[in-house]
Every structure is written in C-alpha cells, then in structure tokens.
Length: 143
Length: 136
Image (tube, rainbow over all chains, first blue to last red; front, side):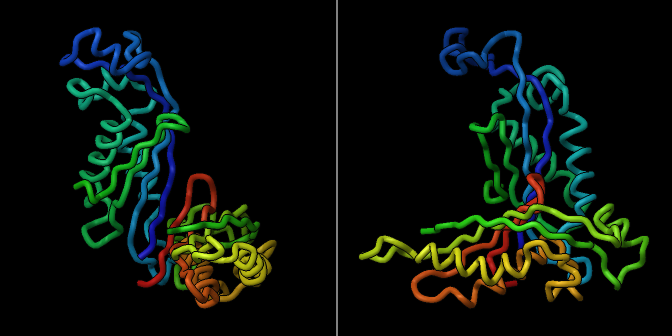
C-alpha cells in the first residue's frame, strides 16, 4: 500500500458569522474574520489517496482522473466564490477551515466510486490550508 | 518516536511502459510520456522509528544515516536518467510511486540496531508526493 498526495489551490472569500450567536459573541469568537463585508484566502487542498501500485503503469491512481474529480467537485464550484452566499452548504453553517474541510471531503467522497470504482484507490485524507499557518486535516477514520 | 532526514536529488525520467500502446501511454502519463525524457528536483524524506538510546539521547546516528543516503541513494540517483542508468527502472516505470518503493528497498536492509525504517516520502513537485511504509 502506498499513499499519493496531490495539491491544488483556489481563491475564495468568506465571513465567519453564526446566526446562533449574538453580535458580541460573533465578534469575540471570530474576531476580524467576522467583518461583515467578508475577506478571502488562497486555499490549498491536498488530496491523499491510498492503494496498491499497478504493476504495469507504476501508478497508484490515474492522476488525470484525480485532477478531474478535484476540478469538478472543488475547484470549479468554489474558485472565486463567496462561500457564504454562493455555496449551499454554507448557507446554514459557518465556513471555517474545519467545516470547509469536511465539505470538500464529502464532495470527493460522493463522486469517488463513480470515478474510481469500489475496488480502486481509496480516499484517505483531505488537508486544507487556509493560510500557511492554519491547516485542517480530515481523514477517512472520521467517517 | 520518529525522526526524519530530508535529502534532494535531481534526475530525468520517462514515464512510459513498453506494455502499453503509444496512445495508452499518452493518456496515462500525459506530457511525462515524452520519450526524450524530462526531469525534476526530487525531495526525499526518510523517517526512522525507534526509542532514543538512554546514553546518547539519539535514535540513530544521523551522520551515519546521511552518509548512507548519500552513498546508497544520491550517488545512484542524482543527475541520472533513471530509465537508462538506475535499475530497476530499465524495466519498471519510474513513477514517483516506484521511486519511493525502490528507495525503501535500498535503505531498509541497511538500518540495524534500535532504529527501523518508518516511511519514505518522495516529493516530485510541490504538488505531487507519495509516502510508502513498506510491505504490500
């Protein structure tokens, strides 16, 4: 078994604000990320796949298919978007790095079998960098 | 406890299998199937697992590990065309997956004493990397 990781990036804006909290609580919890006009990040996403190396191709996963699923489920729908206003999942929940990571994982998970089948390489982990210093990791152990 | 050492080498490779048609090679490897080859600056992270020696406070002598990587990996791989100059890549496609497995096979038998090889991570680019922990 070997793990392969491929990294992608996209730019998007968000605002950290919860309807369940008061203005004051929102301010205290999210600080400047609560700015009503929103702000943005250069997000990086790393998708880690696990499986066996094909003896003929020397590959654990068809990298073009991996690029394809990343493009279709993450990059195309999220790049240059306002996450709160344009992505359905964040109408109700706050687009923190944690929630965004879970959303990306679940988007990949729902398209995975359609792309790679059930015997193919497994989705093992999604890591998301909001900045160089703020990273969140979701593994299939959380399922 | 796991300690890791990072080394780098630069090499050329051709991702192409003789068992596949030109069309299949193109589809699977894209531009990397160019029969004239291309190259990368590879980064290798070798992680070793063990308990520190109570006297030296070290899992293993890192200088020894560095010399061993220098001799058994870098001298073999650095500034080479892998397909022509580094076996088994005369008959195994030098994908980043197979490079990690080959480095594991070169390093693992040489670690003796309290340290054992935990993983070989190879970054082919900033975007593409693999991690191999041995076995099937």
